[in-house]
Length: 141
Image (tube, rainbow, N blue to C red; front, side, top):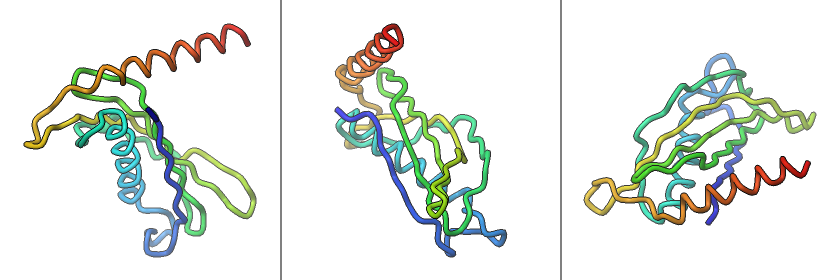
């Protein structure tokens, strides 16, 4: 089970404000899309955004740069999942990257009538296995 998602887009003129930087709403939309991909993969079904915690816009992403969105599962509840989402600006010509935005999304798994449903137990098992693998790698390094 994949617990991450990546989306990369080129920032074109229709996506920018009058200052030439990416609209914040466009960044949030891509972040929500990435969180939705992760939560749907993990829960094996439809999910909705329940909460976005503390969105920090740190750096603008300029027209002509690429926006890369990275989402990763960081927590599993009975019906919900916590997903860390970051956006990165990349100057393609220079090959430089800088973090632009970060937030934590809470996604809830839903059934066919829109009611919360349990997240499969394998999601927590996968998260625990990843944490154990990271801890083992740190202990060896």
